[in-house]
Every structure is written in C-alpha cells, then in structure tokens.
Image (cartoon, rainbow, N blue to C red):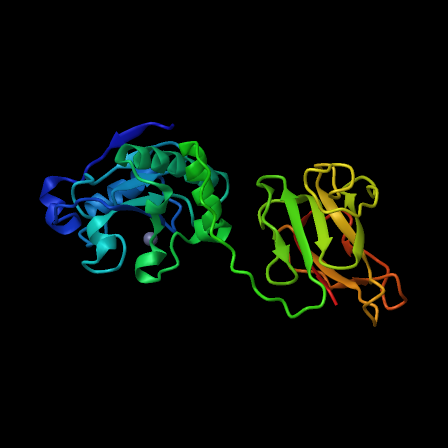
Length: 315
Ligand SMILES: [Zn+2]
C-alpha cells in the first residue's frame, strides 16, 4: 500500500466543503478527468470556494485524505441524496490522459478501497460509481476500461472473488453463434463475446491469444505472431488446453485466419466473417472465409501491426 496522509480541509471551510455530519453507507468512485497529482487536487479543492469536494484523492504515489469520513462531501451531483450525504468520495488521478500513472493510481485506489471495505465490514456491493447518482459518465476512464474489471481488482485486494453480474441470455436469432475470447498482454484472458454484440480486446493492450468456438458446425483457426510465423491451426475452444484449445503462444499477434465448416444440415454454406483493429486504430475490412468458393481465403490483420480488437460472426 502506498503512503496515506491527511491534508484535511481547514475547519473554516467546512461550511462550503462538508457542512453536514455523515454516517457513511457506501463508497463512490470518481476519476478527476484531469492530469494533476493527488497533492495538487487536494490543494485546489481546499483553496477554492466551490461546493465541490471529495473525501480522498489517490494518485500513483499516495493516498490523501481531505475530509473526515464523519462529514459529507459534495461529490455526486445528487443534491441532498445519498451520494452527497452518505458516500465516501474517492477521486482517482490522471484519468484525463491515462497511461501508466493512471493504471497505478487505479490499483492504489482498488487496494485502498479494499482496506476501507474491510474496516467497515462492508462487501464489494458498497462500491458504487458517480454515474449511479447523477448519470454523469464518471469515473470515465475506469468505466471505459471496465467497471467489473475494477471491482475484480478491489475484490482481489480483499482476497475474494467479486460476484459477477449474471449475464442475461439474449435469445439469438442466428442459426449459428460464434463465441470467442482473447488474451491480452496486460489484462490476461478477457470475457467471452458472442457474435458482433461486442468485441474481444482492450484498446490499450495487444492481443496475444485467441480462442474461438461455434454453436454448430466447426471452425479451424490460427494466428500469426508479430515478427514471426503462423502458428499451427487449432479447432478447439478451451483456454485450459494449450495444444488445441486456443491459438497463440503468449506473444503479440498481427494476423488471424478463421475457417468455418458448415454442418450437413445447414445450407447454403456459411462463412466466418471476422475483422481486427490494430492497437490504437480503426477496424480493417471484414474477412470472409469458408470451405466454399464464396470466401476471400485471406486473413485479417496487417503484418507488423499488433492487434487490439477482434470480432467474429458466422453468416
Ligand atoms: Zn465524479
């Protein structure tokens, strides 16, 4: 845990910054949408006369407490609602530009929040986001990177597994569904994606491995290692099977090739439609491959460009 210190707002500012006594019932996570350090955020908040405040601000180096948890803060944009009157507001620094400082600040926040939860005897359900109270898209970068991912981090620091939201099964109207997951250099295996409802990947981290399955029929697929070769074809879908369950060897990939084999009971023939986007870039055109002549028989990707996103459907 990084150092925790107090820079409490002066009592003559209580009327502006934290006028009410508070019994905390929750934690509210924010991103500063700024590139200032925790110290500068704390100084700025204490100095100005805006009815805007927070309890704690965290950067990559330290945790600074600004308002006692026994007083309220004006953080949630919900007037005298539970956000402003019962929430411990935590700001995470450097969200404007992101990068390593933000990643570290977010980790520090997750660890600190885990500690707070334990000290209050609270579960992970007490961790809320600014967005829950006023609809403001905050904590913006944490949301962009995945709220469940952040909760998982907090839970990991608590030594528990976060309860995952139960996915609502969407009845697919498609004859054949494609399922896929990717592993990224920074974030490990990501959750499964079905068809084009989402994409697999994380915009800030290259993909290293891909696993693909289909509800009917079969696939074969392979990946190309950046600066290397095509790896062997695989046909399975199981991230615990390193031989035939996914394509990849943990190194960054720059191309993917997928074939779909239409089962005998389905005609006309279907094909795998898939595309990739390089890290930090937009999608290249869809690629179509099948065992029949309606495929382009190519691959998705550009040699030398690490892949950041992948999408697949069977059409
Ligand atoms: Zn906020």
